[in-house]
Length: 606
Image (cartoon, rainbow, N blue to C red; front, side, top):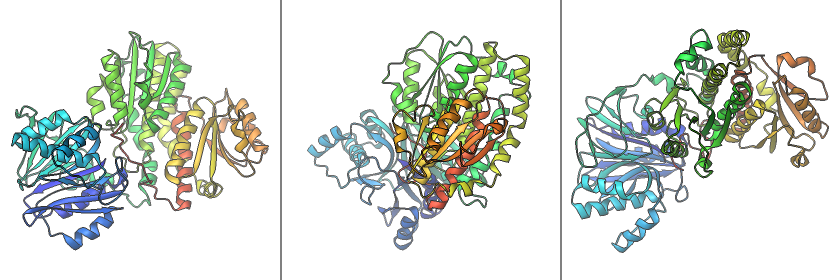
């Protein structure tokens, strides 16, 4: 992994198109880049460790233009970041770019070594190229070779493939890892996501599992593994090129935080307009549920933790929130009326998809919460709820997370109503807060104190987050955001747990970010905050405005007040200061905010 772009067209502009696509895909995170171009009757590789700009310098020096090529940004899985491990990989007659992981690469490598193949990289991707060449030798047919390789390669892959005896075609196929095909009158494209070719066309085709794409300059033909031609729908994307520009913001992350109010409002209005009672119709298929599993990774899992807190406390339905990479190995217990909710911004998260497939095999009702229409998760779940975050470019999620929390909050409201645990007064108050949610979020974003508070954080080596209940779930996301983009070590703890050992790490000046937004829990939380304050901690307290009278000098050094709102919506508001604190801290440290080291946007490997 991480980013793929391919081009074939009438115009000799492959170099420009591929570089533009790679620049667009930089948000996914990567450590090297490369491209393969048909030049002077042969495939030539140009690779570089580091940024696409480094590759661009080499390409501009060495490459004439071409009408066909494939390119890739690599996030290291097998082998260190280096030029020889970067993509594309070439072995004999096959050159390819690859996202995913070939799990049986070591077995195939031993077989290929016995047949005289040699390797110059440490990657599983080069072995895939060699194995396709080996299948081509056996079958003397490119399509039969690709079909045979599809069956033998275990794991996940999205391939863009060139054969050195076919200068007029790019081949593509995928298993689990996403791949889309762009089409226009005079050029065709393949990419990891639509943004890579959106500047050239908004018309695309989704390549499915067990399909092979034959891409020529004037057409794209899709066949199955038995070489039957398949009819495919050409979809017109609603994405705007402007949506993937910074629009004057210093970073995509800051832009996306500012887009949160609109994204949350749009998500909410997709399922209700005036009252949460409308959810009884839009979510009517979620009935007779007596147990819920929420399964996700990273920030999506922390959104799920908020949902668990809300559903259990407000709807009284047992809810488990489990990391997707652990879910399959915990032998989850299902009832006849278990609902499994799977959350993924991209809809292509490998661990989450694998967990979904297991739940479906057990006959469990499945619900996907996803931002990308037509993604694997959206297609495979029994039901799907779409967040309306739009494209999110920064690797560290902000607005996609907020829309997940907002949508899960609606789900929690629905279950509370189904259980007859919300009376008319509760419903009226929630509706009122929903009408104001966008403007309330905007007021939090516009506060000017975050940079000043970040000055107390950016030179520290360790930061702690404390909270109880729903606030603890928010602490987990706040801590993750800070770690992701500032590289400061931070940990989130239930407020009552810090004294069970870890308080030994608190010393004079240690920053502690404490959350106390729950009226029912604030007294206990404030007691825990005073424990760290008494040991020299520098405390930033996030507290609801309705609890302002309880703030004392011995509890904190600085305060951020969060507007009072329904418990169902508290998570959407409280996360905003934590996102902006992380952003301002990373800015002061001079970090590369939109593309943090070692991270990838869409994790399509397990």
